[in-house]
Image (cartoon, rainbow, N blue to C red; front, side, top):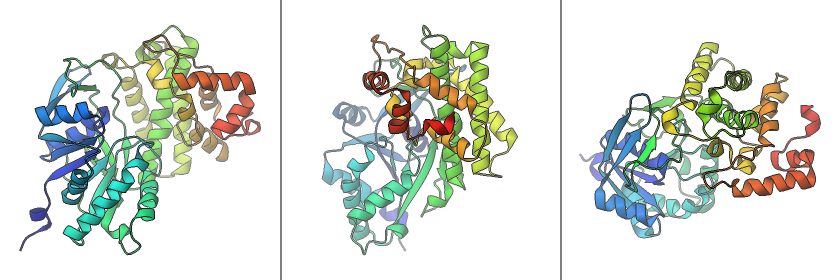
Length: 387
């Protein structure tokens, strides 16, 4: 009797051939024996994947390493018929394209799911949502339900797997001139929602399946994302001439302030999810992150970590969510508030000597309307609540 595996290819279809997709998600599944099929709009990347069928990941850490990722190929996103076929025949799928790109893949994903049901009735497809986005599973579910026929059993056929993406891949020049090569830190754990899978959790080294996934997604936002932002904003405020995150963390006063920010947010996290995280676990996590943020080999910059203020100061992002949660739970938030204040003054310049383009507009709004109105309209908070 033929099994599901007899009909489906051991292929891992990944929407997004960007740095996280190549250095992290694709690398994990390639080393687990899957053929990794990247789908992307960048023709140069797709052509290079199909020509070389391999690429390198340079690990930047105290012990440098080069990882060779093999058994890969690419499909251009505009080749709709081929993309649909890949979705229909894949063993597992993932998306790593950023939340702004998610709505654009819904039509072809819908078509692929319908073809899969026609070709292999009853066989579910798990989709790993490798996005730094709260409630990505709900968003994708809602969008698919709008397009799929009412008779399609979405909740039985499609597993939407939330993740917590902790790997840092800064925008540094690749070492060997190969368009596919990418540099990244050594951290290589992909936390996934165990409860989201319809099929057995894949046996992939580095895949860490967790229950109570919302807590782990918020751990990333409340501690990693907020802490990283604190390095940029506090670091720039104290040392506006510094370029790198490690420079800022070499200042003991900056490092201690960032630690207090992360600790304050960790206390809020524990109030929201009592019993999930121990004090010891969160303290070890904070210590590890501070070490990783100070990794000189990554060459990470205050500009990269802090720019894009409209997004990073939005109501559901790294500063405002922990801040409003602290207020709601009546917990101390003075250090988190200090990060917000520093962010409003962040005018760090990039390699071209210019401020991030949309951040120029942000500061013009602050100058024109004042901080209070900007906080209300962009951040979604009432300044009276945080005084």
